[in-house]
Length: 447
Image (cartoon, rainbow, N blue to C red):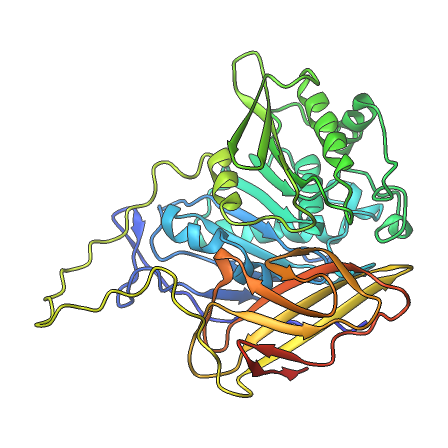
């Protein structure tokens, strides 16, 4: 299967001034995603992109943000909120790109024997090298390193917390699985026991797997936040409980939460605190959600769990602008969709199919000269296909002619920019991709 990547490449430069990094001749928040081609030991053969906000402390925290299968670092950069929040809170974001093929394209290696050993090789060593590079090159604080990710990235989040408890201070795993859930490559989705819906080990067995991964480590363990949709069928919701059992056992906590609440509609949260009242494990059940996390607001909740949201970095003061002679026009609160010029969009659709199911990863690229503000992508599913869940977009209806609409964090697509969305579907034998796509009413080139 051929996986295409649309990379957003730029160069970020800055200088340090009175404890904050402020560019000499660029406006605030002008930072861009940059690829690093040589960052150190890289046994996983991975690619590294980094986002360094222009305004940041002298020794900023580091967040490693990891994509799902079939995605890429630049794709997760454009489809999640971690970079925009970095501008506000002043932390560095590392976006690794997995390069190893698995059931759904390129996924982070959480199945091989090498990847299950500390410094054993494969992707975990590559990711640790990226963190060290951010420390050397940008003064990133090696005592404030955090991991997060979606699906395959959520799996690798828990993986890194188990292998490198001395490096990571906390992690937030979206739709992940416990550490050492996969027996080998053949056990990886769409087949296998781990995500087959019947995985059930004891808390002691799960906890022992983490302790054995770093047997000589006796220090504090990284705090863990877990997220899962109750209607997730690709990575079954039941695995959230298995992850809770693993990490509460690692911390020696009760399986009964110390508190539970609903911080916002459909977000059911359970917290597991130690004797001092510190919440070491936090689990969110998102009612009705499929394989579609993180959605709007969840990145901010993860950062709050990390302790990175207070106080925010204060941006430089911008000199006041002389008001115009005539009053400015106030834009509408919900601006209408901006149609691209005909032929000013390109769509790549990558299908991964098995038995009676499939996933589609769709990259929409704005090849025009003007930004798209709000978008809807229309396509027709082949007969027999029906969408069961999706991510980074809403889909309606589930069959026939489908309209995918942006969610809050990916409404704007700059010229040359792209967004990646996707869905899971059932099929009756026809696993083909849609033949054509239109973006805001204009036809797109199908790559």
